[in-house]
Length: 61
Image (cartoon, rainbow, N blue to C red):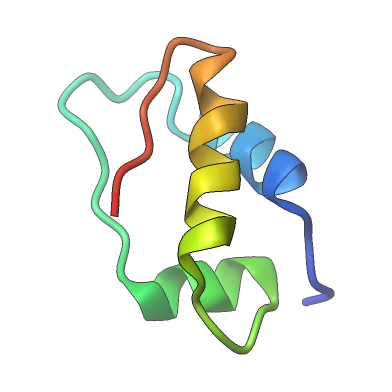
């Protein structure tokens, strides 16, 4: 998979899990695989959280 931005990933998460009410748990490895990234940074997590907050959803490490 090619590397995606935090904005693209946030939109994908929102669409993929919009019907889930209890929450979703992802590991660092899950996020790296889904985004095509090789490392996990707190800045990327913060960017995802910021993008999801526009939809009223939180993303926490």
